[in-house]
Image (cartoon, rainbow, N blue to C red):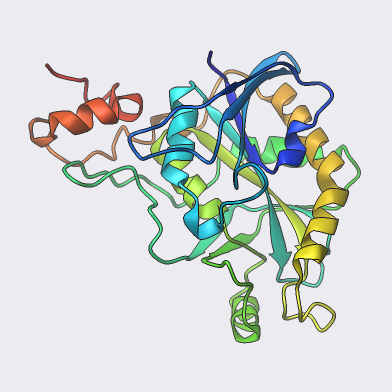
Length: 289
């Protein structure tokens, strides 16, 4: 069974009344196991694949996520677009809790996370100046506007390591840099989706003001979960409407991201890598026997 569109988020996104023909599919990848089974279903006439980012019951911390397996699994399923949803803290007064932000840039503050499929004999350098698919980001933001939610188009998402929330010094520093929201998960997804030639965009659900704000100097999990729950229905509608708006055509450059990125001489690429990475590189480096 295959899918056209991948969706990454919390379990609340699976509880859409419109979903039909559900089935679960779990498989391992050359990079290990994904966060859990992919839930394949039909939504607004399109085949979609859901993945709970943190696993059932939210049991996988951001630093433990197997981002490579998660994105590789979507590629194996035939996914060409990924719609992501995640909680973020706001670094700007005007980005209020329950607002929706559609970032167009990232800043990496993570350490020791696997952020590429390549290495160990095959080197690739994909262009990443514009880290999200602008077409998908625009469609998601348009769908959000239609819900009546407060929507912010563009902005920079700081991806921190976690699992602790920011120190006050860090939060103030990011604000001084002009950053907009802060989270712990989306950057690696965006990098790997680009390497997999999958269009990717994210919907950032503001749950709190991070600790820089005098009223939010002690961010709590209860605060985050309460606002996420309140935003769940809006997020579901945005996802469903975007799925309906997405056409099969891909006029962006995401679909050809590897065309000029593979730098290793073809005859020097190990056969094992050709086989393992065939879903990613097969069109450029066919498997040889």
